[in-house]
Length: 265
Image 1 (tube, helix red, strand yellow):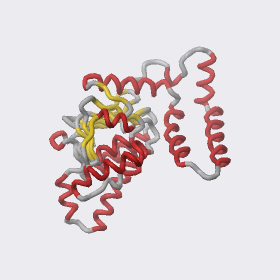
Image 2 (tube, rainbow, N blue to C red):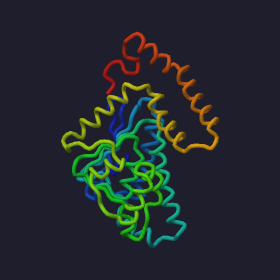
Image 3 (cartoon, rainbow, N blue to C red):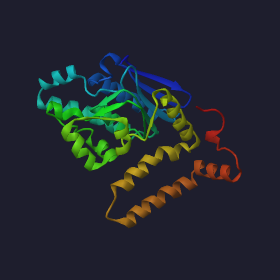
Image 4 (tube, rainbow, N blue to C red):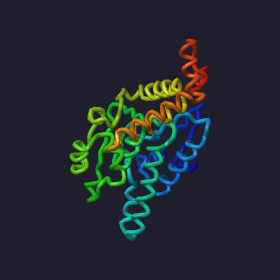
């Protein structure tokens, strides 16, 4: 991977570090492409059980690189559309990644950085972390990341923060549902590790399928019978799978399931 993104593998965990610390891990077209490719590689790697997204330096991600934005301001509308579609692909790849994902958040998370946090299944922030959907200050809107941010904080909160572009702290982020936990800065790694340990105890297929279930149920349908059939089909498939049978056998035999045996993390 390029130096703008560092990938570290530790047993079953892939940690992706945004690595532009001098720019507070702001992203440009190159980093968007590289991060998308790294996520796709992690998705395809059967050895990877979970992905952690983190940032080197003082910030998680300050959003878009202003020099890149300045260059795009001089580009055509079609060039800007293609550029925005690349960012949309990144966000959707992260949101739908078939592995549990954890955002390790510290320092600043602005604009698209908030989008990355919202796309992760679990988000843990350090005390003192700062957030902002600051696009309106530039005469723009967080359009590409809006589906994921709305899913995290809801429309009522989004209407305020999208319009004002004001900053908010980790306590506000926790209250709104953008992050799941706030810990002292020196406890951030331990908190992430605790979540990885919990993921390691879950069935790999079940853990990876959880976000699919949530997304489909949340999307809803006017046909409740169809939803019931879909959910029944999912649980039936899991029960009849090797993983489901092993999980039930392990529970009844009072032993760890095969996927959780030994030190895998």
